[in-house]
Amino acid sequence: MDIRAAAAEPSNAPLAGGIGSRTIMLLAVALVGAVVAALMAAYGPSAFAVKLMKFTASRWDAVISPYAGVYLGGIGIVLVVEVFVLGYRQSSIYRLLHPTQSTWMDVFCFAIDFLKVAGVFMTIFSLGLADVALKAIGRVTPQGVLVLENPILQTVVIFVVIDFLKYWMHYFQHIWGFWWEAHKFHHAATEFNVITTTRGHPLDSAMRIVFLAVPTALLGGTGDQFLFLSLLLSMHSGLTHSMINWDFGWVGRWVLMSPVTHRIHHSDMPEHFEKNMGSVFIIWDRLFGTYYDGQTVNPTVNVSDNFYNHKGLLYDLLACPWAVLRTIGRLPRRLLARQALPPAE
Image (cartoon, rainbow, N blue to C red; front, side, top):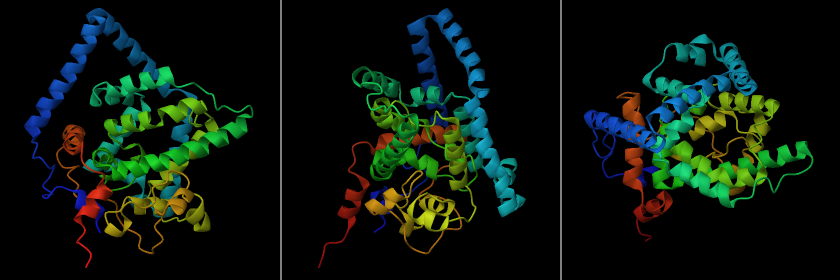
């Protein structure tokens, strides 16, 4: 049974609900205006201007940090590998230099992530609710109570536990209708390049951070504060959003997510739906029955009922939360799929 089709609207018209470009523009102006007005009312015009200048200056510090350099280094390694393995015309470098509308959104998401301004967009699109939730969690959650004395062992524990939780978070992103509509923004990429890994709607990112807030606080971090681990993670995330046909052999079947395995996760073929949910380790999919063990590999990436990548960045950014609002309160998509099944004879 096609779970996604069963959970979809009866009509798959572009952006179910028919929201138009003019409405999108009005929503954008109203949203930005409301946020600016609220901040100016809270701080006063002069204090708001000072905070804005300080925030802008702090972004430069983020850009020239060692972590930014390591991240770019990992992505750069994958870019070079792609040229040798795929050839220039099939590489991310070529696609980034000849961007489609899908790639332009990847570039935008990469830019706000790299410049460390994604949090601003998360606040705007969550209407401040994510900030309220994080502050509330911070007040009641002990910090670092599960920290071990051995830093190496602590890093391993954090890495494995967070990856395990990311598997379940990713599962819920696909199963719950409202979260799927936010996460579908990532799956709406119609071609892969090494920065597609950063493609995500700020509303989806806000929900992810809130979901992981408690375990991150208890464990004292996510593990990526270690430079070498950051390098490996940036290389792995770049590879898994590359069109390189590497399956990593038995390692890719039992240990690590491979480029081919994650490409299957981004397939619009029904047999691949809700498969290969892991982030770094594929073992969680093996344990919980979401591993795709077939032989079919999708040559392209996309998502069913994709209404993105046609009307510009602003339209897509505002169309996503509109779609989310329309699905809040629905049953989980798997239950909807079961209701759609014909009665047993």
